[in-house]
Length: 299
Image 1 (cartoon, rainbow, N blue to C red):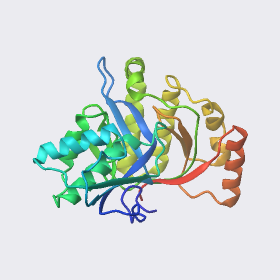
Image 2: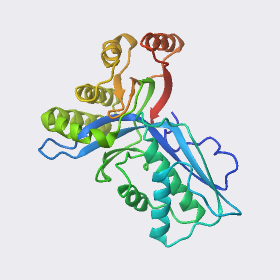
Image 3: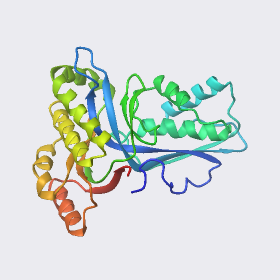
């Protein structure tokens, strides 16, 4: 399986000078408190996917305009230039993204990271993850898409608690339900939920970390399913009950969701064959959704 985030990448957008690329996610295998307690930190184990955002800058005539990805990427450019005491030369930004916005694919963080990677290359500076984290910390909560491996990551503190390697990978079948979730708007709701269910989350995370440590995708998928079930109690998905009910029928190893998004799908250790893929398409179509397939993780 090609590494989800930084394997051989497709060609960057046309008319590029230098470019930066960053992978996105299919939600998370875990989102919840780092440990049970009255003041929980939001911890994530994001689920990397081989879908990407490219940001490019072509030096040339004229004053540089703002990055086409919006205000947060423009802020990232400003903070980067201030940090290094640099001035952006004349030129033009362009971008291309395979990530949908507002559904749980970490599109915002990927936009920022791809922009920063482009700037490192533009100025021929050695890539520095600490600078990236420092910029992210001044803009938003983040997923761990700045890493080339799974990680247990505190999204608000921008701190990697534990690197989890590249030994786990899955094939997925998933859909995107209608609507978007404003992560900032639901943070208080999530924290209250985490306080009520802290021991359950603590047990779930322990199992997930055990699965990564032993390289056992079955254990990881089981813990991801538990995390999805817990998420359903606070930010429910309309199709979750039907998807969970049919997991064994389809032979899926687990269910995953974007905990503060609208993605939901199945985890498979082995690629679904043509007959199973057809059944999955028909099932999700019966729920009113078009099924997508992608490789997630590494391995």
